[in-house]
Image (tube, rainbow, N blue to C red; front, side, top):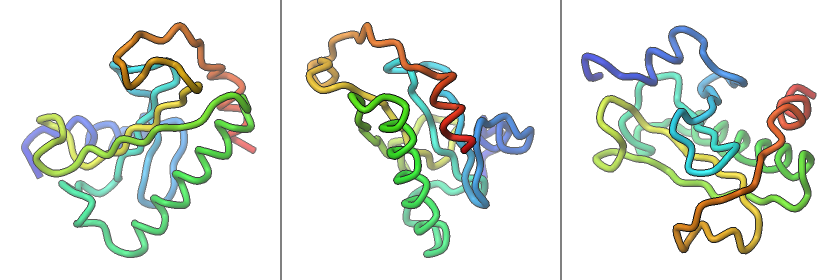
Length: 129
């Protein structure tokens, strides 16, 4: 583990909005889109390849849960997942997965800014059910 990992600090201080045994969910501090979330591994893993089979199953289940909660929050939304792994993740972080609620034809792949406002309160309410 590096001397200073921002995600390990977040996990240590329980600064998340939802958790499972091995993962924590937080809002991204520099969102690409409104509603941008991060799934962080609680243990410090550098890459997806370091997760054991229990963690991998839990990660997939959490991704599915979030997809279902986002769709229940607003049926016009879907999700893009971006995995930051190994050498490609930001310095001072560990393995994490971006969760981006998106609308069809929102210009994401063209790099266009979004004007969509993600219903965070409704999402959090649905997540707690």
